[in-house]
Image 1 (cartoon, one colour):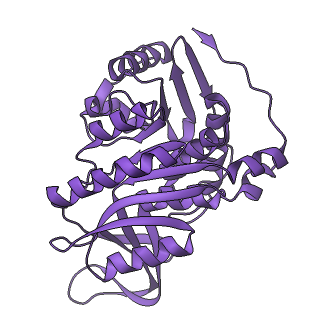
Image 2: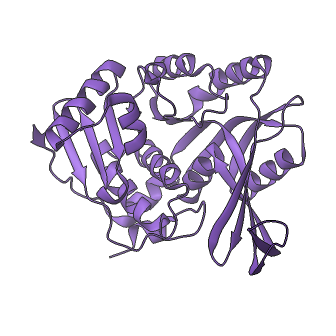
Length: 322
């Protein structure tokens, strides 16, 4: 199977100007990432666990919110459609989205709590993560679908960010509507049933997600065969498997492109997949070809894993590095 050649790169100035014209619609499971930082100086007398004296707290956008934040950080015009609870965490998410220059369309479900992931950090290590979550009602999801039909016509690229929290119950219908409007659809998948993503332009599983669906492999040739079989089954234009330290591999009809990971120290892989799909979406929305978008997304991933927690990459940082 032939390898794709490296495309000719446009100027940095041209790229940055194009990013500002890109319109991206992000739909999916939004969540609030909370970080409690503290000092660990003793073990609890009640149980053999460290006692963390909290001295600082941070809140960041997680899930589909982090995808939207990453896309907006690159300069794109971003709309986020999701469901939250009618609670303090939902209000915090709305405020964070405003600060990130994301146009938020958050449907409030009074019967649920906004998804929150609380991480306790001591001595620069995560000691505990506590998750608070519940699935939204189907009535709220139907309302979200109706608004999606109105929003999809005014974007260039759609990102469906599936974190398995119930916010994408109607994902098959969403893909169909987007394709009817001739929009490219990027899916960050979850779980073992990928058939619901059939018809998407690009599906971006990580290595573990791909293996759980397609099975294990003993060679690159077998890996390629399984990937192409899955791509054809999903009727997708392309499949991008992110492989952590091994980089990422793009499969399209009759071709395979492997890009090694950027050589840099890895500090935290949290949210790296969000950065990849957000960068892909913005680059495609700005008119760049898929292979070039993948190369730039790989560069963005190499930068963001050098930061703590869910983080973003700006255009200067992305395009001006050597």
